[in-house]
Amino acid sequence: MNAGGARPSLWKLGLPFMALNLSVLGTLLVGWDRAALAVGLASYLARAFGITAFYHRYFSHRSFRVPRAVQLLGALLGAAAAQRGPLWWVGHHREHHLYTDRPGDPHSPVTDGFWYSHVLWIFDPRNAATRWSRVQDLARFPELVWLDRYEYVAPGALLGACAVGGALLGGPSEALRMALWGFAVPTVLLYHSTFAVNSLAHRFGARRFDTRDDSRNNWFVSALVLGEGWHNNHHRFPNSARQGLSRFELDPTWWGIRAMERLHLASSLRRPPDWALEAARSGRARSLPETAGSPAGQSSGAR
Ligand SMILES: [Zn+2]
Ligand SMILES: [Zn+2]
Image (cartoon, rainbow, N blue to C red; front, side):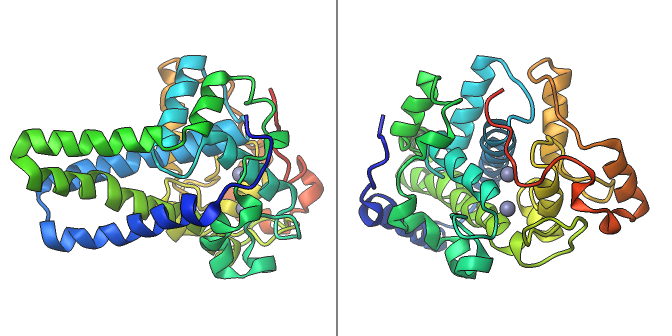
């Protein structure tokens, strides 16, 4: 277990990240076909759910329970998005909730500017190491610690599967096409969609609740990342598994968690209080004080 020493951020994080972003240009050379687009869409949606339902709502906020095998599958799905290991992701996200838009927030457009909050923060040596003190509840699972340490295994396996699958279907050119459309393109899109929650959804959009931060409900971000853009709702009720409060606030991640519940793969879903749902329906929530419910900006930590 790395106790907190800074890792070499430019080599370990910066170059692979830049290379992956630039690799998207390779699609201009290899072109596309329906199979490649279908694989790319599936790759995007599955890993987006891994980030939103598992890395975020489950691991960071413990907003529902799952069996240990499902927990591992969710961690693998999130890790395949190449947004670093689950414990690194969760530790930084919990700090974001503890210090939102104040000094100590790892990625705030209010304190550090838009581009730092969007992408530059991940190259900051101060954010290179896993924040073990914030993830003690998760560090007791050796499989999660392993995934955090060997963070390239899950995305590497997905990349390899895409390339091998493409090679079996159509030789080297199809291998490259599948590697790009099945891995690189959806990974880069998911990077910037996820990052938009930290940048755009703390700058642009409506504020239903008077939280102590600058979080916003942003429909565009929500459309990109399966309902995670209802970010003012989320900062008001951080431990809720549901973030869209009205029927117009589409929340596909919540639908997915509900489907898991019906399949007995998830239980103990935490919901926003009835008064918040009613207020969102009637449009009266904006005037409700922050102190009317549970405190904002707190993560529930260990179950
Ligand atoms: Zn936030
Ligand atoms: Zn959160």
